[in-house]
Amino acid sequence: MVQPHDLPLGTADGGGEPYPETLPETHEGSREPHPDLRGAAAGEVLAEYLHRQATDFLRSLRLHEESAGSAESAAVAAEAVRMLRRSARRIGAALRVYRPLTDTARTDQLGAELVWLSGVLGRERAYEARLDRLLGALHRLSSAPAGAGETAGPPAGPPTQRGPSSPGGGLGIGAARAGALLERQLTLARTRAHSAALQALGSARFHAVADAVAVLASEAPLAGEAAARPAVRTLLPLAELAHRRAVEAVEALPLTRARQSYNGEAFAHTLAVDGELDAAWNQVRLLVRLRRYAHEVLRADDPALAAAGRALDRHRDAAEAASAAAAAARTPRIAPATAYALGVLHADQRHEVEAARFSFGRLWHPAVSAHPAAAETAPVASGAERSR
Image 1 (cartoon, rainbow, N blue to C red):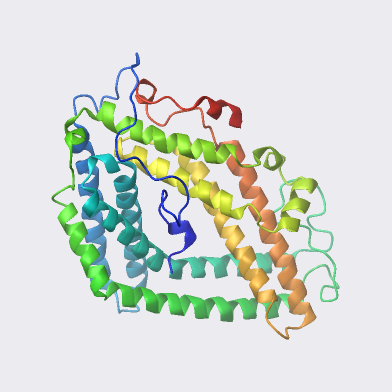
Image 2: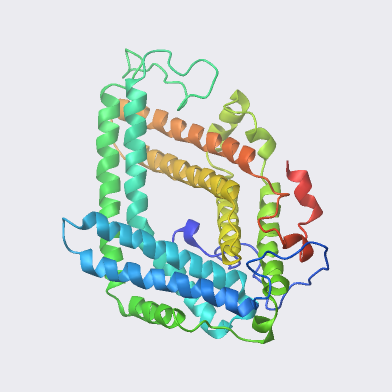
């Protein structure tokens, strides 16, 4: 089953409206196009990006085949899988955003298969990272002295409360038992995910994807007259459409509440609703990531956007860790001290969720276009100015 955070945008599962069959309307402007794009055809720019990503995909695949199956090269194999997912996400994003330039009969199917592949390959690492996060938080919380975290400021987690298992202010034996329970549950999930990934990489379905990417490395699936048009008049409107959709999704979030760092009202609310808005925030993460990849095609780098994306990644990680702690607390017949420790751990991770939302609110700058030539093609919607 594909993880929600790996679904493509513009699908029934991923949410949002489909990307257009035709190009958005362009607008005249006075700014000069970016030097890298001046004189280039849209198809040339898109093809160069797809060729590069497809080549990286195949190189990572070769590295994985050479390193898989050996304990000594396990780290190399894991890195190869990470790079496979990296290339798969970027290829899929480029095919989605710049869909009007492509042979959709080929690209739509390939995009869907890349989503499947990225999802199945990413699950093992997700469980591993979740366990590391939770065990690290448990260690921090159980080591905290009495009264730690009760003063104002940016603590690493919520206040550590006294309870039946924490006579000294820590979590005592409850933390050890909670950690053992989480390790059993998440290690089992990780093992199953590892088996699923190995099965996927040996399947006919994966080999069909690899064959399609190999073709992409030398032959971009371009179609229609749009590919021959100037890149600055063809690619930029589509990239700006991705930008506007990210802006609109951010505008729908309650950023005003998240702007007060670690404020009591925000923390109490997020504990009460326990992730009510997580799905909306995750959709923003997908849209911001898609926007960043779309502008990579245009050879535009945006460090601020990358930082905002990392804050959204932390949000997802903390939200999923909180869910794992809550699920563990529902295990039948666990000791009260274990349940208490898991409850404190859940609260800690919900606090981290709020901190990530606050961080994103400070990093997000919607009115700044990611590409110097964007203003001459498709200006950002006026509503973008109102999100700050």
